Image 1 (cartoon, rainbow, N blue to C red):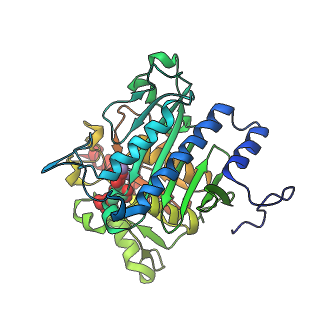
Image 2 (cartoon, rainbow, N blue to C red; image 1 turned 90 degrees about the vertical axis):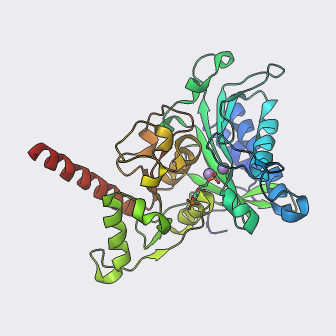
Length: 370
Ligand code: AHG
Ligand code: MN
Ligand code: MN
């Protein structure tokens, strides 16, 4: 534990997630339904952790689908067995509690309304059931990301449109990382807090209250193999990072890329850094402003990857943009829309966002003069 104030001065013993949520409720920061929702998601994550932890022994590695026919999700990506298992665990756990109107997932084309057999509540849950799928078979950290919205209007009439709310409307967001230890990182809009799974007790225990992302950093996370597909301001920004102490930035930078957003963001929440998945020509558009198809405007998904991670990072004092605007302000038009993502240490996110804006301004001036 790193916080000197853990557990709270007026209490004794470790603070479980349950106790943390009860105390938040006493502070008037959470209502019973949202509390139940978070407990249910946490319980589902524990089940997913058990599946992930079994690895080859559980027969959970490899692709979903039968024979030679791979199972393809709405993203056009081949599903792993664990993508499907994690999705089913989250749906099953959340179906009957009476706290939700519907779920939406990376692995499902359309939202999943709570079946008529159960009462419907007022919340909407979005998730990336298994993030970092390419790492499953090589025993590297993966995770689950989730976002919670309030259902606008009648829960019986819930549809895709009900989900299309900006990230600022999220009432809770979090992820669970299945790494050397399993951790749940959570925000309900009052800071970002980390809980570590005590495997013997079976409960999440608060191990860091109020995580803080350092404002400045010397570490960036990006898949450099895509460099040739980036737009001009990204090329210029990364060139300056790579130039190190003798370049315009006047300092050396280190690089990390785990290829699990959950693991990369967890490192950034812990010790700072910037996570970047920029606009990329090979994803399907000729130019970044060629905004015809929002499902091809980047690799990462707004509603269940970028929005929850942006809320967690902002709540920890960091920043998140798509290179031009704050991610949490984006009004979605598609459930599975994609976008470029820049998040982490505030000063570094400002730097790269400034590069993109300066580039746009220069292009606009050039166009006006032509
Ligand atoms: P998912 O496994 O949910 O499809 O997400 C994968 C994402 C993200 O976790 C990671 O940052 C990124 O894809 C890695 O992309 P590359 O393989 O292109 O580096
Ligand atoms: Mn993902
Ligand atoms: Mn996924």
